[in-house]
Length: 71
Image (cartoon, rainbow, N blue to C red; front, top):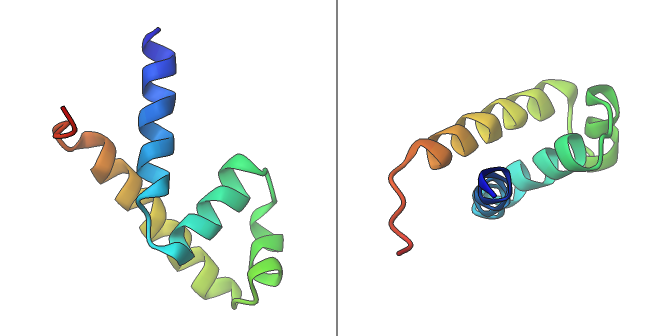
């Protein structure tokens, strides 16, 4: 049951990302699109897509490490 709870927390964190970060995270981590295809799919430069991915991962990590205030 812990794994399900962690998965729910992950999806909650991803849903709270800014739109551009959510787009990159969903395409890469949930849809499995390779890194090199994401800039083309989203119309971004490779450097911008990489930076957005970096920020998305940092934001998700921070959200998952934050104390749970939903209760």
